[in-house]
Image 1 (cartoon, rainbow, N blue to C red):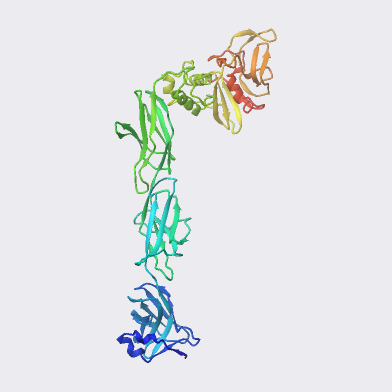
Image 2: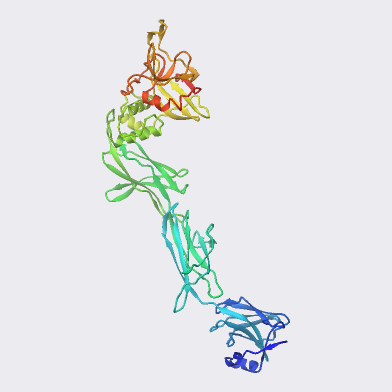
Length: 522
């Protein structure tokens, strides 16, 4: 066995060790390496480490062996497991240096044990309250816990989370482990769907101890979106609708602002994330509503933006303008009536849209939005297709209701005001007596003509012929007047719609081959 001496081994020895080491030799493995290994090779005071003999080295098992850290600090809790292994506890006062085993007159030389410096951390969550779908930033920093503090660089860090204060901690899915930067910092962006607690676990390095931050609580508010309503007619049921995220949260509460506070009005549950409240404000004023959802373990309280509704009680007719016209148009458009371009002006498109709505509801047909119309908009009668097909466009003409319905992919897409055969007698283009009747049955667009087309019975605007005997869908009369479609049957047999509607649908809907069903409602 080769020998090597550690001069410093005697200088700092205790009374217990001096007798054994004053004349002792330092033993190494036969190949000149350390005579035993230390696992781990770094740690903190109070940590248990395992010493394992290398090569042919053996340890005393009678409890006479002593262990020192950095030559002069005796280990505590020395436990000889076997002739080739023992465990010890890193003592108070230990510093970075070699580990030795002292037994009788021999000192067994081991490798260097690095005493890790303690660390401290800081952590923050910004913001600590987020709305569903929004992000927050988890930031943390690791530094040395000494009189001269400095950043710890290159320490591994893991972001962990849990749903409740008593739950288990787990690594955040998708949040990759990081190492501290030059200023000792790490950060992650999180996008939670419910209330969470986060913490940062800093792993140990040979030079520095690890640390774990205390929990940081992040609250998640549900996202409540309310569909905008600018105006509502007084005394008329008005629907306040919208969506909440995440879905399946409830119950939801409708609140109304009264004086300086909010008061509950109605309670409901969201179905598939959608809600629908019905209100009927009475007096002319501006009323303020909001939707709330109470806090629970999973989410913080949710509050929508206030919905400010101007309550109006105006009878609307041709020539009127204002926010209530826009509200009326929006509601009719949602019910698939042909209202033309977006506007706040009650023009001919609106007159005919209201007329078509009145026809479907069974009201007097005057194109005026009176109280009866406003009220019916809350719970209207609907148009149902008689001959729906799964794809493409088709046209249905209801002679009883005097409406033309355009279906798209089997669903009602547009409802138009129309005037069909008036049932009166007249002299046909062939000079023979005829009756103004629109034929019923299943047809399709046969051919089309652009612009004004003159016939013996009058002029047709952009006609789309659905029979080979001259029956067509077309406009007629002054293109600027807009009143060329009376609210009753008045044509020679063709299906008359407004000139503006003709231009909206002539090229893409009334194409050759488009099915046309004409029927009387039974």
